Image (cartoon, helix red, strand yellow):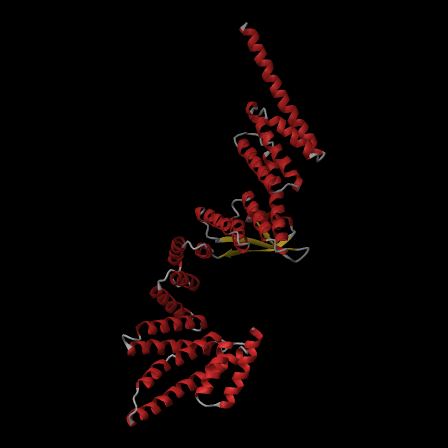
Length: 439
């Protein structure tokens, strides 16, 4: 009885082994005739018996599954991923064998895959299809994990495509790998075309130099892009309003270079958005030390100084005036750097005209004595001087922007107040013309 059972089991195992090998052999024939649909069916049939495969058959199974899913380059990304996974599995399994039957072929196919993904990525980039470009670059990295620049460029393109979560995923993976971007590129000139060609390694280049097809070998070392990674991640988290994470990456970036102006400006924007005006001002001031001819930075400090003056004007007029003078200095500096900076002209004019409020208040408080009349006339002259000081800034705005309603209305009112009727009529007409276009 026991002998019969053993015989049945033995025959059963032989039958399974025969079926496995038959399905795989059929798959091989299908692959040779490029009938990948039939080959896939045979691989699926063999897969049902995969748990009973011996080591050699398992290696062959994974190799053929890789070939079938890649389908000579006609596969989609999902199929290519399955193909790569199985080719890697075949290579890994065969690494313990003394004879490598499938490893060379699997590695050769991986090179073909890499070339395809790089070419597809380049083609997609030329067509500005950033999603396809970064997906193919990611696959290039999966095929060749030593080439981390593929993953870095995939992160850049994912950001360009506004796929921010995908970009963050790539960047986090790079950080886990300790990626810095420092690498050496190997170049040589192809004799037939005279064009430079990049090689994946010195050894690969040596083969071409030795073969006589290339000359002039040289190396180019790329600088670290670690700062770019941290800055990009901080910027993405800031756009997602995750300020804590953004600031954490900013701190890491500052550890590399605390004077990186892009990091300083990024942090300043976050500090402003969370209401930390004091830190914002310090950061903008520091940025100006690095880039003193930045008109935007001067304008921003002008706004801060002006706001500070307003906040303390009632309690400390002298200190408020000091802030106003600082603001005016920054606005004038912004204009000096950029003569077309409309907002700086407008803010400077507004800052000047702000002084009339206290003058008018004092004029209205005067009585009917001769001294009061004399004081009134003095204040009227002061007020007119204020108006006249604002005119050049407002006229500059109009010259830069003929449709700036705020500027022409103010000019109309000022010229009326100083009894310059010719200019009053001019700007009254311009105001009405602009208003009619808006209506």
